[in-house]
Length: 69
Image (cartoon, rainbow, N blue to C red):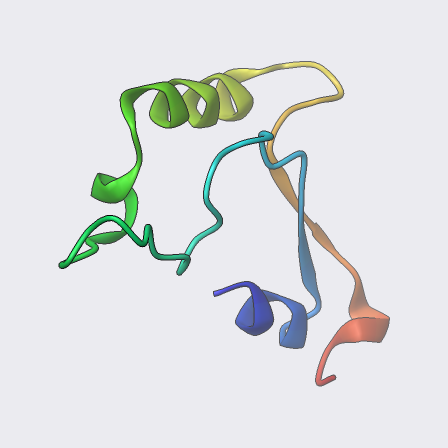
């Protein structure tokens, strides 16, 4: 997912520390299922980052000069 975002000229800012990135797989699971593979603590961090209204809010930023790379 991250390479696809970058090739579209988008970057993901303020991803919470200790939370797997989209498309990463947890090695302890035999059938990873995306967000359902996150622990409760990781889900809580991700939700808090999305709901943050300050500078540390999880968001996308358009970076047109990266598009197509």
